[in-house]
Amino acid sequence: MRQRREREPDPDIIAVLRIAGASLAIVIILVFSIFQIGWTTEKPILTSAVHARPRSGHVIMRATADDGTDLAVLPESMRRKGKEESTQARSTLDSSSSAFGSLFGNSAPPSPPEQPSAQTQPSSLSYAIRTDDETSSLAQYIKGKKAAENAGGYTPTPPEAMRSVPDAYVRRIPQWKQVLAKVADKDGVVVFATGTANYVDIMNSFFLTAIVPHQLYNFLFVAMGTGMCNSAEEEGTLHPAAHCVQYPRNIEGGGDWLNPNFAEVVQIKTDVLLGIVQEGYTALLSDADIHYLQSPTGPLAAKAKKYSADAVIQDDMEGGLNSGFMYFRPTTWANSYLGEVVAMERRNKALRQQEAVNTALKHFAGTDFRVLALPAKAWPCGIEYYQRQARRMYAWHAPCPGCIIVHNNYMLGDAGKEYRAKEFLQW
Image (tube, rainbow, N blue to C red; front, side, top):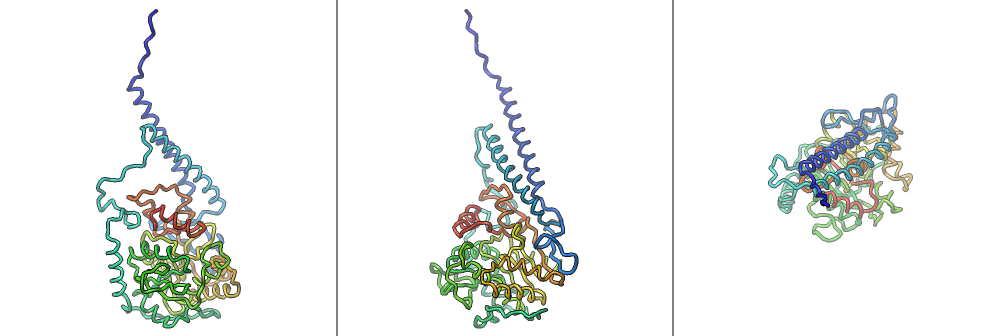
């Protein structure tokens, strides 16, 4: 009998099948990307710290995004559904990407550009491949900081208060007025961060990756532990290139969220805020687990002016307004509000700062105190930046070119924060 000959596959048919498969994978990716964006895009709604704008008086506003579109946080029910859908979409995207790569025998990430030009490099130093001399950048910061000290041009005017306000403990620091005059910029703005001795590594990373690259000479460390401010760079001390003062009270440990003393530690942040405002300066409190992709001081000042806001605060999504990134101008209402928060904290040592900040907002309903909640897209917290978006990190690109800051919160423990910061090239 004549043996039947096997017919070889037509190469043209194989090529067509591969192209069809690739096209299908692309369509799936696009569909789920659009589906995800539909749930994560913010829409303008009336809202406040408790997501319900009062009928009159006290106004908690929602900022306008940098592109001019009004942004506000989605209602909690939509957030939960959006988070579930985006998680499902992220899983499908990952599997679709793998299928797309397997069609061509390669699932590796895309290759970086061979010689990226200056125009294609990301604006943030944090995401660029670091070819600059960081020692030189630090030296430039030290030189600029010295030139900016006591430059003058700003005359502080301590604000009055609408009600009885306690005096901030931080004002007991010897020569506190002189410290602020030395640190503040020409517009009277002081940026500060606080922390205990166990938080030193995160605080130093914040200084070197956020403050120094953006040449923020008006930055001040307020140390809660003895010996943290040291003129020499030693283990367990804050970087000597930064302005640093010792808080009047020494607090050992307690910096971790689960620590019983955590409430006492974070309450000090509000006291320092009040102490700066009471001297007639604008204060920006920035937690050290925040990464700056752009300098925040200019945009904050512009938004405060545009909305005539006494305070500008980061939106913490499910957590209300975030007490770790707050910008306060030296106004009568800002002084009164911060005084109310500090008074609440002194009455209850177990009261967490963020709970006090959001509760005090309710006390000021019906007043002229004006608070601006920042749009989450440009000022994201940990949920918005790390969890709601399917980000893939490569050293040569910026995953969020429109972001100004990123808050590495919604993560328990200093070790977890450090690991995630390193993973996203923010350390």
